[in-house]
Length: 385
Image (cartoon, rainbow, N blue to C red; front, side, top):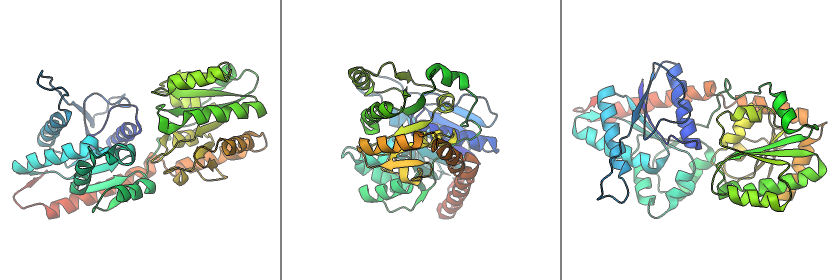
């Protein structure tokens, strides 16, 4: 198949999933065309089946805001025509689904039919999409997609709750590349951070309020009193300055390190003993899955899609959002020397259930299904590439 993938090229979850999916599809022989405004951060190698098309966004004094959606639709039209794509797969509803609809109508006027699949990732539904400024367009664009997928059952049900969606939504979970995310031998790194054998706790995120990083710090503060430990905070975002002040106020700067954005997150996870994710909501919890793949147990909230990933009492524990005391109790239990090996042993088998090699065929079957249905329903005068 020749597949066009439209995504955000940033470190965010939707962009990472879209890029890794495209790379996986290319490895098994499909031709993949990425269409976005800059090269995706995870698109870091050459493959004969991968093509990158940059969306050119001209600037004119007339426009206070550059019309990205129009430029994106035009780019989709051109790539579909000249690469003869079989399918457009757009990740994150805003603005990709509406731009794809416009591209589809332009191509239709030129006698070309292209099916569109929209994958919903989380905040495009649970946060941004509910805004009155976007909701009518999002609802329309999802309903006009030929296929719709969501990364968790929670997100599927949230979409039906918040929007008047008439389409069936296929749940295809997020996935992990176990060739990349695996426990590495980095004992020298652990020794440098924890020279006296302390336990190492890790949190990674985009440092937004919804991640509740303050709860991470408060949990660690109490865990440290019971078990000598260190905390690594990976990522960056609007809450970072506030969290740094909190760590100073609690006199913890000697035990907390801010590492900023890292590409090789698996190297940090390889030396971790516990991963903290107390988020207010998570559509899936991709960072937690990456931790499991590196054999790290979890302390998470029970919000959103996290119960679909974290198995209570086996891969870690879940607490109600904001219940720091319960997270502290659970973290101390997991970190006990007699308990930690068991939780670490349970982590990787759980991650294997979300291996890219397992999830990728689900996407391939769904692509084939939507392409077949689309051909049957397309007017006879339209060309199917």
